[in-house]
Image 1 (cartoon, rainbow, N blue to C red):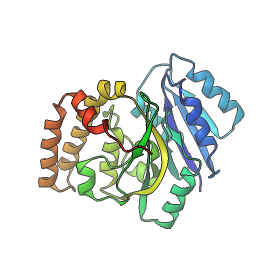
Image 2: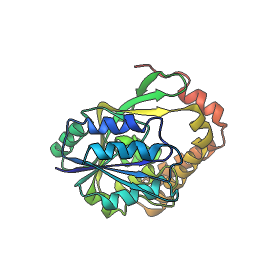
Image 3: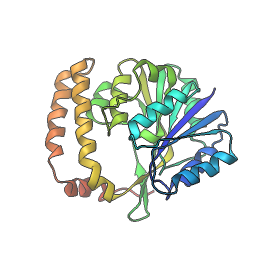
Image 4: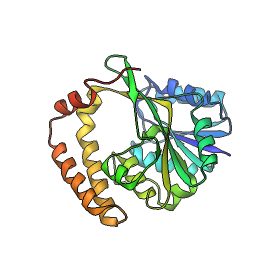
Length: 265
């Protein structure tokens, strides 16, 4: 069954080669790899073009003007020809068996339309790796309205369901994956498998700079989900209030609490 892996790149010269190689090395071979350069100003284009010239599974697109991750992903999804869409980020690393294991799970569980995995957190500041856990099994609406329980670059999504809900909402510049999952869970099942199949790169600089925006968009996604119906109202409103209070906590305090003492792999 054909898979379309989609990845957007913006000034990713430092890590994009490793990300591409990790997808090309997949044990599952029936896939296409769609890459969008979102108007990079570094050497990202030449790096991707080199790999595209060597492997016909890569389909390379580029923007003359930066449009952002959400629009780039929707555009790539329109070009995709696979029955499933697999996500990848330009600074992460996929385990060679990632797609094979996810597709095996999805074929064994046809009632599930989205499959995520657990992973490792790669600390760009220290070079250390630690466990990056998410709940395993089929997710409930209570679990998802509380928190985004999936790692975006680990997702494999049934194309028909992605199209049914209208893809990513381009008003969401961040937390676009969370907002998408909240809509998907209304009409289909989402599950995580226990395997650690993605290495997710993280830096304190990014967290301190963009973390609050991420939280704000996630808060908006929760409010929208409650307003559209299908989620537990009292429970959802309770967590919306708490998340709003959490939003005003300084990022430095959040960083210390969330990442100060992580279990190493």
